[in-house]
Image (cartoon, rainbow, N blue to C red; front, side, top):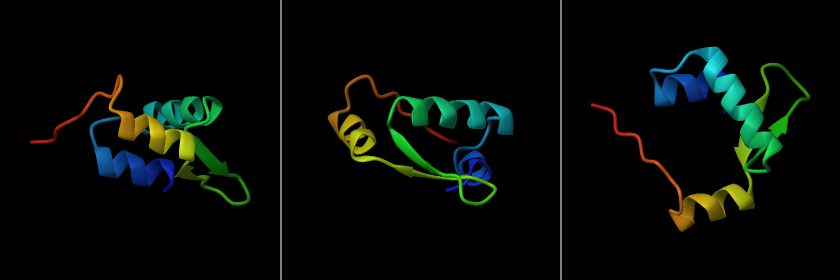
Length: 64
């Protein structure tokens, strides 16, 4: 997904907010970033999958 796809999917956050979040998740190893084209695309890593499946420290967002 691109930052824009993520912004639309999860709604309510600005493009800049989503971009900063994705950069942090990339730095922390939770997502990979494909920089061969613009906009960048992001894919969850095994570390990210483990983090989400553990439910430890995960905050769930609910859209109405």
